[in-house]
Length: 378
Image (cartoon, rainbow, N blue to C red):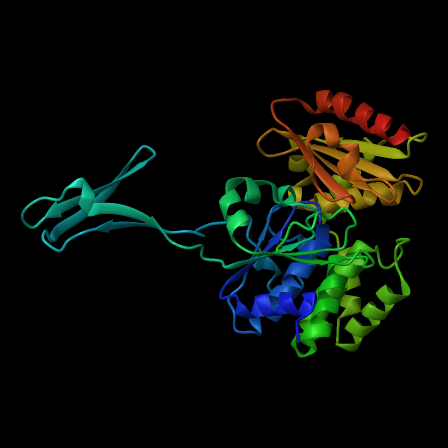
């Protein structure tokens, strides 16, 4: 009997020798929590698995989940270049190397005789990872620098595409896209429970429930369904630690984050007609608050919480390289990608990111905000 699509996806995971989980920009805590939960399940199949996220390490509020600190910001060492030298007639007596500028120089001294050009060749190995599991990306571009720097890898290695967005482009060889789900964590739980329920345990359930609670603001968003609540109940039945999740996601804030909130709220601006709120943060704000860019998701959440009538929030900030970046967060029916379309955004319809090189924050505000207002009134 032919396998259904979910069974085929699970078989692909079981056949893989070293899968890689990639988290795009804009997925927030749900994307990270889903990736951590899936990685724990795959590890039970005795497979080494790594997580790489386009936005870098997991948010601090998720570090109560074991292995959250193992998320990497870049794809390193995924391919090996091998130099092969024919030594059948001419043996190697000495090997040395040095780096000059941006070049590696390798020096080989023969024991006797010489080599010619035909004796040396290069060979690229196969990729270290033989399966990519993408979580929460509408398309490959959502992986931003991970994709841009390693396009060949993304095109040649099979991809399992896990998402819940109707805008997903089904770019994977395998597509696990459930538009009735409220979060990627819900999709991941349902997939495992239908195919290999014995892999689920207390830690995995806690990761998935954390993703769902973060995505739905503790089940307060309008897209929460009875099925969502049943999934949450199932996860708690598996031992998911709800109180610990709520404590870390909503009740635990560092002094540094609170200071950054204060600076962002002091500059809060709004446009009632369009339902837009926005604010600005400079590098000086980060320094005075003692905060980091990893604290920004909490600030965006606070912008929306402080303005219940707002449907779109924009946080413009100066990053460590003096570039101006923006986080655009929306609630349905608005689409963050569509609102920021002229500025080549990356992310999801709920959260998109843009970046401006060589501009100051005031100029970016004057350029970006009117365009978003215009898009909201069309």
